[in-house]
Length: 126
Image 1 (cartoon, rainbow, N blue to C red):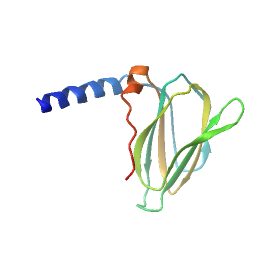
Image 2 (cartoon, rainbow, N blue to C red):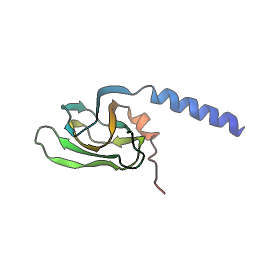
Image 3 (tube, one colour):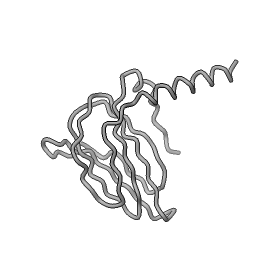
Image 4 (cartoon, helix red, strand yellow):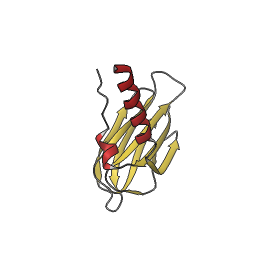
C-alpha cells in the first residue's frame, strides 16, 4: 500500500514538474548582471553550480528589480557544488546579479501554476 502511494505521489510530482514553462536560461563562470526577464507569480529559480574544485567554489545571487535597479534581496549564497530550486511568489520584471568564484553556473527561470507552487517544499539545511 505504501509503495503504491509513493509511486502515485512521484508520478504526480513528475507530471507537475514537467508543466513548468522555461522563461529564460542563463549560464556562465564569472560575475554578471543578467538581461531583464519578466515573470508572473509564482515562479521558480532552478540553479546548478559546478566547478573544478570541491571547496573553493562560491555563488551569490541577488534579485534586482529591473525598472528601478532596486536590490530586492539575496536569493542564494553557497560555497558548495550542487543544485536546487527557489520559489518566488511575486511577479515582475527582474534581473539577477551573479557573483561566482571558481564556478560554472546554470540558472533557469520557470513559470509555474499556483497548483505547482503548492507542491514546492524547500530543503532544510542541517
